[in-house]
Image (cartoon, rainbow over all chains, first blue to last red; front, top):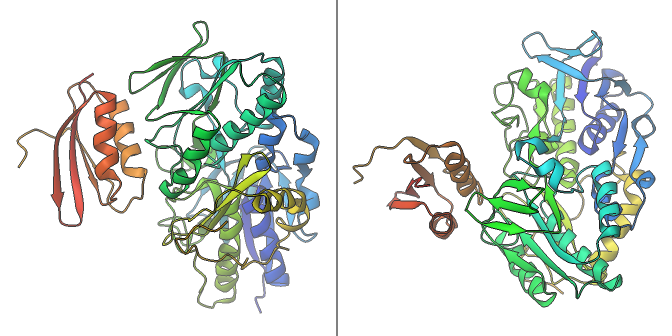
Length: 395
Length: 79
């Protein structure tokens, strides 16, 4: 038993930061002291923004006080971290304070940087922030038909299925409002298919065709001209729109860049198995903040957190860490009309998504409802049963 | 073998799809007209994705060279 409790600092109170803090506090007991630092102290359930934009949920359901999600013994500092000094084991805070750490977890997420694309802020809507989703909801209410373009203004971005889900759900929304016939929906993809993962595109694209949703491939957004109502691509195309929805470019947080820990875009070079930040044995990274070639999503952070908690607990106790992250991710993908599919994959196994059905749609809704009482506290089994995809489609 | 001068080389070996293509797109975005960019990719999808993107974006695919365990793509930014 340690004489002095190990000091663990977690930057970021999103799904990854909250879960890792709760798991560590439980695992370490008196052997550790865990502090979460978060600039707002408010926890957002970000998958819900999509429903806000489409008028299916209100913002209140999506936000809770971070304090209510943390175990009592976890400290919460509602402050912005401004700099990390890895050699000294110190985190500097905006109001002048400092926190010492023995182990640091960077769960700082991604930030939206709309100004990287000229005209994007003035000319388009988004559903990647609560305010953005609320503005889009109002714009959709005012929409009377016309050209609705949905695109991605930078890779990587959070929740890769979200733009595809949005086009399917907005198609259903416009039908319900009786203005589908007067509307033309287009998905602008930066790749030569609808979705990053080929097996998922094979399920998605035929449904898009059935539903009359146009797909424009290799459209990497370069510029928006709000006065002309056009969006241009790096590939040289220019398209007219009446309503434009773009996923804004994402970057890592300033504290990562200012501390010299990130790559040029601010993502943390992270070991894909141990989740240690490269070159820093006492610093771990999870969730959207890493440079790992997997989805930036809450699901990724959810599966990474137990690995980081277990590895830090072992290091505190002086035993060899033996848990590795295998790249596990599980994402639902709504296709509208009360149907959804699911993408389950890891580093070695690409997903084999089933044909969309009511069961996966219901599972997503159940997960949305259960999130607050289960995920942040680690009440869902840490080794959630997830059959490895077999390569066969299920129905 | 190529006689062109390479202005920028991107080693995207080990990077899964769409990493190599997105790295090329980033380099084209940042580069000057006339720059020649080389991408090394071990991802099978690159063999179709990269030539298709270069054709759509109106650049020049200078050469595609199969190497041991990866492919070397040489692309010239022409506009």
